[in-house]
Length: 558
Ligand code: AMP
Image (cartoon, rainbow, N blue to C red; front, side, top):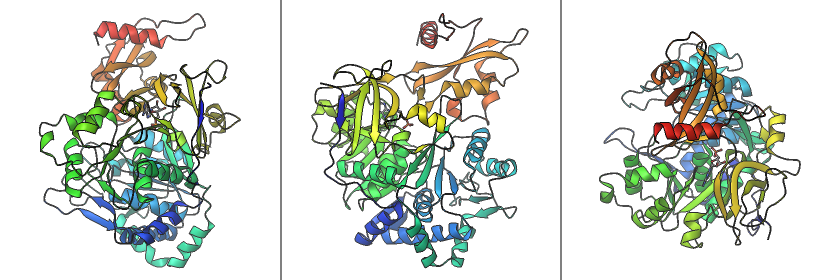
């Protein structure tokens, strides 16, 4: 049997915009919780939105965007760790028809300015600065460096010690409160007219994912792409208005904003934000305090929660389900989540940003082995196949090849990069994932590894080429290859193998880290540095990264 499957089509795809879908759900469950943000300060109050209140606040924010003159299809960025305003802006931008650009909060000035320029971003909503990230200062620099960026909006610091929202210094800077006041100038009917102009197949979200070209590429996703993917995931998790979904995963990534927000909020369920960044204790406290029925995480998050010294003291009895995704999910961790966290129906999702993201998923009715050892079966309305990477022919079940996905969830393309899009999506509409997988007789998919030389450190995808290109700007570096070295905590750590220019002095990991700090996201800074005289090459002149990795593992005894 050939390694091809198509998902079922029992539940039709939604043919509406994100804004209209939300209004429909809000009208059905007006007084149910939609959004809860756990107290930011000890002893403080959680912030809560019912569906009605959230819809009102989303409308106000959307009218404020219209008041600033934001047109349909213009790019509005958000650069912030998780907070309630992130979710409000996700829905407000969708109602206003602006394309929301998710900016990774770990980015620094170099990456921020690249993204702003790449898509011609008009407005950027910015988190308060914290002791490790001067968001306000870097956003101000971007205003100076990028003429297309006309406005930045500073999110409030909510009275949290160590956060600094910044005081506007010029017309191009606004506080969030000032932005909301602008809404008074735009009536509700103007927003309704804008919403009526939008088509579900319009792009509504840009998510940057690191590319082999050395710089991030913007996956361009429509309402139709992400609303249907989120809705489908919610259906398979059995979400209803009684579910309360705890989200310690980042909103800038589809794990938070699609698998989390869109799945829950298209079903009348509540979304719960435990905090700005991930903390294992805060995640479990949120489950306990707000009666979480579903908990999300990449494998390392669940590992950290299970390892808490006071793990047994948390009341997790309300949990029934959740999602583990993002990288290979160890069977052992899945088993513990099921037995020790009460997440009896937990699912593994597999996918990538370019496919909205989820293309295969386990189901509650699968056997324990299928639910812990595979990434499940093809999602509804999608197709999966496994091909021989050399010939492109579909392989037999059981054979390893490249996993490809086709259907409504495949992105429109990479923003402004048609040639890169054509490399990823073939003429027949198949997205080539670059992941090696096999399909068993029953259609379950097992991930074997990746073709592409991407490094995944703690759930963050890192493309060596991007870092190599940056390191080439160091005056002492002649040549550099970045590889992933195995690491028990993060899965992989970066190693920079460097050939120094003749006469150059010493260059160690600490020196290199100093060179990168403030210019590259912390997770892209190499942990190890190895000085070499040459790199192993193939006869055709390609560097043998696999061999370099093996040598490094042996030398460092990893
Ligand atoms: P991203 O675009 O950041 O979502 O990363 C996509 C990549 O993450 C995929 O191409 C896979 O290599 C990896 N990935 C995502 N989910 C899983 C999973 N459940 N099991 C194994 N690898 C995964």
